[in-house]
Image (tube, rainbow over all chains, first blue to last red; front, side, top):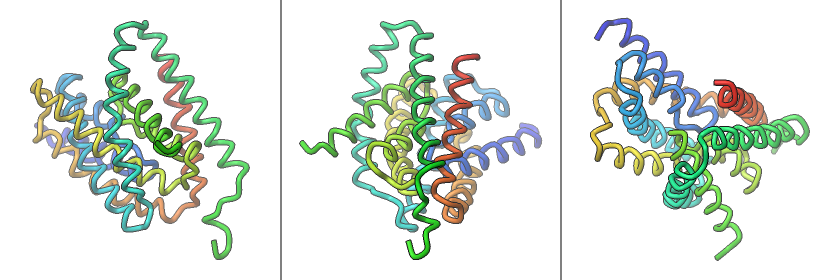
Length: 133
Length: 119
């Protein structure tokens, strides 16, 4: 491995973790292209490897947020443990619907979420900025 | 079964569906829904999302490992700098207004939706 590739992994890994800490995602959106680009692994292997890296990031991030009083562990574990139901449903959908339909559905869901969050950010008062909470 | 548990189950199912389909961890589904459906504050939503992702990613990584698609050395090479990043990111998050997290998230979601439609 070249020094430049190692540096690339360092930068993209740090950026993925930073994003994860700021907005609560696992960082896979940066891990996967980073692994393909700098280590030359296949897309499939990058996805599997990215998931392992995400476990590390998510545990450290959740523990840190717990220290700040921002973790509802029970709810988080319930969502995690029940998610395989959705994975099963997703596999059925993937085998029965055109890929384009799935992509467009996901894009529509993301736009709906963006609308809700943007409305909240623009309109509702921010409790963290109010004096004495 | 409480309405609350049903909502958590729905969030889990949606996160699972799209993580299975698009190889994501589910955070982009979990964080908005904890805020919009469960009345979570932004910081609580991101912290709780990370706990859920730890479980989801561990299950999915185990499944990938069965097929030999997990490289632990590569995971460490990118994951260890990411641990530094997540410590910096969570620390920074405590210093910005909560609503700014919603605003950043909305922008990322729009960018992702555009990429899905166009690419």
